[in-house]
Length: 608
Image (cartoon, rainbow, N blue to C red; front, side, top):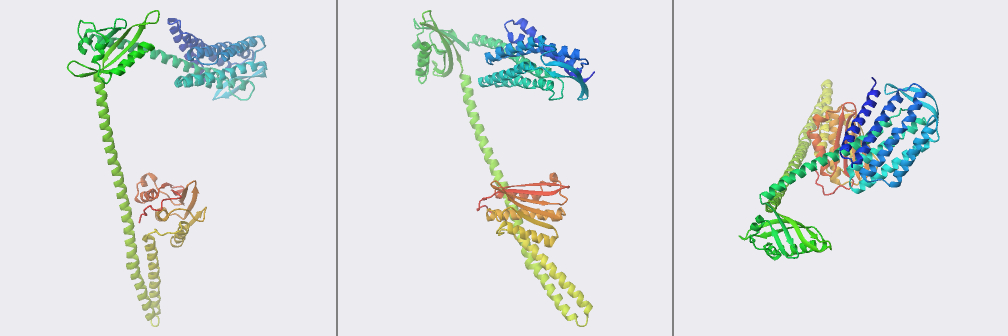
């Protein structure tokens, strides 16, 4: 069995199952018309799927002609069911659009059975078989019928109707339903346009209208099922609420009261009388009750009750009552006014509930939230302090490295360098003394002079590199000089390319960028064994972009991400408000990219 047969059969079977389920629901709730409309649309979608499956495997023109003719019947049922479902269930969609779709789709069905062979084709000449996802499917070849424009127009009206209904539901605030039901209908209406495209020969695919409508049916079923689930949940909650209400009333935590407006008599349950310290048998006036209300709440309660009586509003207030022993309890009361036939208020019925525990819990909750906020602030302060301390330590490490580099530079220049110069001078004197009588030994002494002078020169170059770059001046010129040293001393093709003659960055920023390039060049030469290094300076929006590319062997970015050199480069970039990224692999070498603001703060402290 082919996958096409399985897919279309599963589609039709799923639609029939959903149709059966919601038809049973409608049988139990005859006033729930959306369930019946959904059942009809699901049956129609299943019929479309089965007819399409037959068309996919059709072999004769006559068979294909009959299938195309009869597929309009379930399409008619499905279209009318969908439009009616939207009107009843979503309460959306313009009425004139709905009636236009009803009339036009019915006209399409009538014309389809009047014309020969159908409304879509004037004549079907043959059936073409082709491979679609490794399955052989069939499509008709024929002359499109101009009357088919009526069917296409109905599709357009259906799409407009779906968009209008979705917008209405979205604006109403029910966005989930708008996205699920409305979105699926819009998508299905759009996908349905593949039918005229196949008929006109624009695209080369089989008919799969049933899957477009299956999505709509699935979305409708999901929403109806969700409604049924919520209804069951609400019924269960209502039952539990009634049980809790009865239990609350039985346990005297719940009071019922009635105020006769004509006689000014208040009837209260015995437990509430006892709680408020009111007499057990004597009639209670409204003033007796209001006298138990806390002095700060009396005027508000009087006005709320007055508004409820005069404006027929629901009375709903929270207030404090002072008991006979002087303790204070929180109460909530809710009531409605009943009037006679002439509209005159006669009595007010209501309930009251002691909410002292809730108020105490709210007060405790506010106190706990305040304590948590205090703890959060303390924790935040500690973390900020830790971050500052860590930054200070990192800065001290970098400063220590800088000081150590300068010390080594001075030692090399003043110590090793001077000694090498002394050795060269001594060797030069020795050469002069040996030149007359011992020419061979004089030649060796000359070699020692050259070696000592070359070593002294390399020592001075190393000392100058280690001494620092705080006074680099113009960054482009300094980098070009650095590249020239690399070309001369390391025999590496280092070049600088800049899209401007100068860049408006502060001296500290230039020093840090110079140091970053130094570190990148050191890594490229010493570790990457690079033969070519390209240094690019460019302007990107408000930032200057410094890029150092080499053709070395690269490194493992995961293993080296915590290396000291990479961390120092990133930290130097952060010190001038920028960022530094390093990308490396064995095939393309290493790319160091640094972005800094063009107007970096001039007061940024340079890292030695």
